[in-house]
Image 1 (cartoon, rainbow, N blue to C red):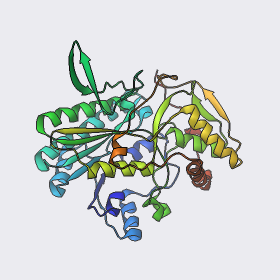
Image 2: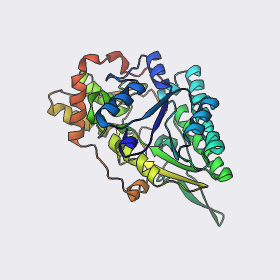
Image 3: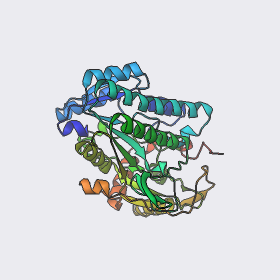
Length: 365
């Protein structure tokens, strides 16, 4: 919707993979969400802008080839991956599905472009989770290493904390190989957790509100804490709560993808941007949500529970993220007003909250 509103011709492709596995795991979204076809129709009604829709599986090379051959896109934004760390750690079946889907789609994108649109620019959604939590500053994708008097630039070391994040590391390596070998043009956006329910396009009609999961498998930390506040459940801090990550508003996600498209990588170039605007620990997010929730009379409590994940709970975390700011990103920060707006929208749908979806149902060990 954002690209269409800016005057671009857009084809959106999906196979409802996340919806299917969300239903399989009893993890459906809180807010009613139209199908992609319905969303495009509603958006055209309220904006006059048309979006083409194709339903099919991009892990199928024939389907991917047909799409790229027919449309000859100048840009492909690749979001077609299983996006949940807990789902990828749920068991052998879920691990296999995550691995096969994520790597196959990336591989198919690469070869479809090589064969049918060699000048196209790939924008791939990476994740800050690829880096893990190293005890040094996280550079923006690359690091200069001096060893025994010689220096070379390398991809910054990755140490992912789940199979999902590991597939994203493999994506980066796969794309870097084809950039070096076939002069592909790629931008890899290392995105932190996204929050927010508002964008210029989504605000045109309540039916265009973004997907909002609050469960333990597909829901982000911010979403879970917001819903727990409204449901009267103590905010579940995993372990010590010192786990620190880089966050950004949904509006900034849209800015970042547009900026990447408008400033494409050149042939044989892999651009990497760390996509975040602020860093918070779990405890800091809990405190922010509690402060706003209490102002609304929700009497929010915070409770530490055993951590279901294998991760450091107290660590150094300082990611560099100047690249997108230099391109013109204008951040929207996690203010009390932003949190209050999300709480108000959730309160409207309080009756749809399923409490048994919130507590952790997946353990790493």
